Image (tube, rainbow, N blue to C red):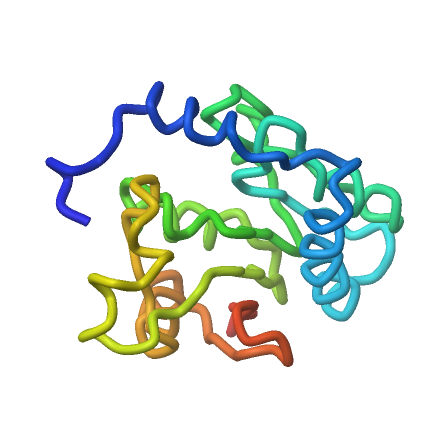
Length: 180
């Protein structure tokens, strides 16, 4: 998305206020549960996890803690976990976050630097159906979405941080793995 079309941060936050991303929303919890299951397949209980872009209520953070992970919430829009990016993590989760990043290259490099050896980044985002369909695609109509991806584009993004990318059984969840 061209920078001239980006929402101001306050407008972006106001748009998120219309979402019902709370622990009492069963559909939302089920959606996040799929991400939590992927994390469980990558790391053992007690592993350090960063919920990058956790949202105001950090629901996934609470779910992962409940499953035995040492999970830290980070979201600059809500001033959550500011020092979190100074630590090292076994897993970093970006659940519907990568499409919102204003400086994609810098953020991916920063997250790659937060990974412990053998660590993973779990990315959940919708991939566009085809380049021709992007203008009419519902996901591209969200004014907070700045970046759009194909599977190949996600592979390239992972490579920017020296990571490999693989698909999971869930079509919109990807795992980026360290090669160290």
